[in-house]
Amino acid sequence: MFESIRNRKQILMAVLLILIIPSFVLVGIEGFTPDPRGAPVAQVDGQDITQVDWDRAHQEQSQRLRQAMPTIDPAMLDSPEARFATLEHLVRQRVLTAAAQAYRLHISDQRLALSLQEHEVIAGLRRPDGTLDVEAYRQLLARQGLTPELFEAQVRAELAQIQVLQGLEGSSFAPEAVAKIALNAFFEQRQVRVASFDARDHAADVVPSDAEIQAFYDANLYLFQAPEQADVEFVVLDANALAPGIALAETDVRAYYEQNIERLAGPQERRASHILLSVAPGATAADKEQVRQRASALLTQVRQAPQTFADVARAHSQDPGSAVNGGDLGYFSRGAMVKPFEDAVFALQQGGISELVETDFGFHIIKLVDIRTPPRRSFEQMRPELEADLRLQQAQRLFTQSMEPFSNLVYEQGESLAPVAERFGLTIQTARAVTRQPRPDAGVLAHEGLLNALFAPDSIAQKRATEAIETAPGQLVSARIVQHTAARTQALTQVREQVRTRLVAQRAAELARAAGQAQLAAGKAGQAVAALSPVLTVSREHTQGLSRPVLTAALSANPAQLPAWVGVNMGEQGYVVVKVEQVLARQPREPEALRQEVQQYSQWWSAAESLAYLETLKARFNVQIKVAPPPPATANAALQ
Image (cartoon, rainbow, N blue to C red; front, side, top):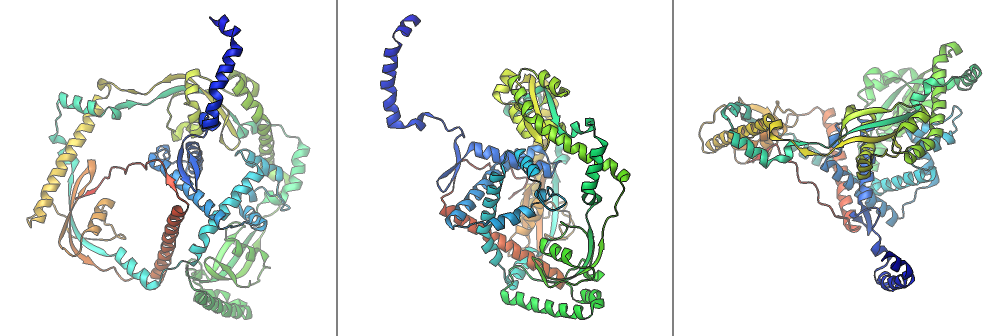
């Protein structure tokens, strides 16, 4: 049969062409080609956001959060709520990008250069003479999969997105009278009495039978799953681990000392005092000019009598932290203050007084009190730091040179990690019972990208090593599964006590809720309610130990119908009955505290206007989110 097909292959090819070509003409090649980026999950201005886009954005966001908060629970980052929040953020970015293009907002080269100069990481790549180490800059971006051109394009896009909302945020303000009314309502007080019905008090009344335990287990099998697990082996190529084994020549260390003595000695510090006249967010041009004139008058005064600077600061400065000390800010180096303030300080001579300096806080008058330069240390004193610095630099170069060979070797000989371990002198490490969910104590195996690659279907089926994955700056890891165990439901005999505990907790909560609801009905009928607490005066400022659900219930009760009775379902904790007896006005505030609250309210108002404007932009650019949001988490308090 196969011989017959081979002899007639030209005829078969002709027939196939006749059948296939019209299909391409009618449908198009893309009709037969699945989108490699996955199905669209959202659309902005006619442009799709795909599942792959979403996954990549969430992975990047999770990595940023883990770096900023190493102790964060990984389960929080991978929850449906966190993933959907990433999608909403991605949609917001696309909307702002579309708006920037529609409004023809342009970021000049000068604005881009200024933004890059202010970038904290890039600033750390500058040489002692102030020039940028271009090679280090390229290497830094390469480790993130970026080129300078791509990174700078991203920065331009981000700056354009900021411009879309900047005009609205800069002009938004809330009148003081409106702010005071809203704040007084938000912080009003209520006198309440509370009765708690704790589920634990009813646990002894629940004695489940074997049949009930079996029924609960059968109805809730998902609660008793043993997670998917794998025993793995992995190797780590780490720049920091390479450093100790690097030998240094004495001449290189001495040359490095001479070239970098000023930088390695530490930054120059300056001590300054200032007088601040603050400007409220959203202040009118006239109000701002009035503050400027008052600041100009104070500037003239302290320049005529510099020795009175501290006294003038105590009398007039509106910086509560420094005014009591005569405006003294102590010693600080570059990077500690906002840029306009810092630039003015580092441009002054000792004893000099600046012109007016405007920042987001208001107008400053600055006096440079002292300049402190770190003492020059000898070569022998600095030798440990010099050698550590040089070893790290050479280790980083060695790591960069090893990245490609390491990646190639784990790809080409993925059946075992022994070749790559032998080639680079690495130790093959092992771990048991690794799961898809990152654990904070798992070291490199807590990296989400590595776990995704490790538990990919091909990696599980073929037990091949993953590609080399950068789990941290200067660190590459490859891992492979040695033994895989699929997720499974644990037998009742294994989890019987766990089942019983859950069932008892559920029934006890039901009994507590029934008892609480009965007392709530009694209170509404004018009858006595058992176990009500003494009167508590509560507010959002003074919770008196009430949980958020109970406090929210108390503050949400209708003040036109006092006394008001409210029941709060606390889930497995039980039930709470709240009696609201009286509504009290907020206590008067000190003028300075009230001024700060009004400023905060103006910021809230500005944020609310920005969100409203963003919703308008979403409508204009026809935003469609094509996946359902996660269902609301089961409330631990339901008002009844």
